[in-house]
Image (cartoon, rainbow, N blue to C red):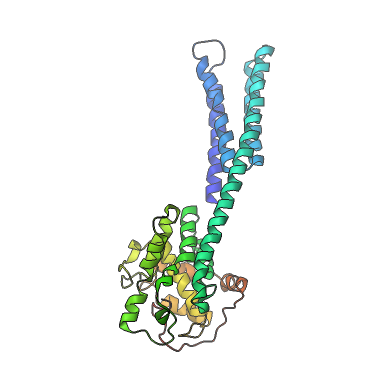
Length: 333
């Protein structure tokens, strides 16, 4: 939303500034008249900017504002010169022609880009879902963590589109490296041995390698590699600490832990969300970024429930936990 308001301010400022410069430069047949004509052409800039950023309706609105400013100039500065006024009014017709053509062309481009974006999203979702064929008990995990992470970003007031895209894509793909983990380890219900843990802890690097050098996934690749780092530096694979961990990965860590705690796994029962929140709060400053935990605690339970209900689940698990380990920063591999 902040980006939209900023763009509106830029466009409005462009219209007013262009009108001010145009009027300030004297009209008439003199040596400086070329500057006046150049300023007149600047009216096309806010029209094209609106067409690029918004739809046809907004473009026509900007064109109307431009036409009004320009029309006043024509009527006042060229009074008594009907032929000049007719020529100048033809420029207004050009404004509208450019606005309509540019608005339609940019609208078509936006539709094409949206189709590409949706195709990318469906491909990434399919890639993330492929893990569910091997690890059925994590069905929906990546999708829920994706939605949880965006809830946290909202609670932190993070509106930058590039960051939100990184969090969204990284959350979907975070565990894709588990495709390279043998079934005897990935699906084992008992405790893992030292060698098995060593193998399991390779999955962040395997996931980053699988994504490879795909340019539009570059930022998400760093989240995939860093999603098991801990705020205190005791995580893996690189032992990053504090703000050295990408912000998207710090947000993701809390979302991932909450889903792992509140869903049933072979090695523990689902926790009540209140108990899960208590355990996450206990990890503030150790496993988790304090600012992300604070945002997590501000999100109403109803918001989390909407995510799980959309996935056919309910986060109302029984209290208590048994099996391989209690949550201590390793609730999910």
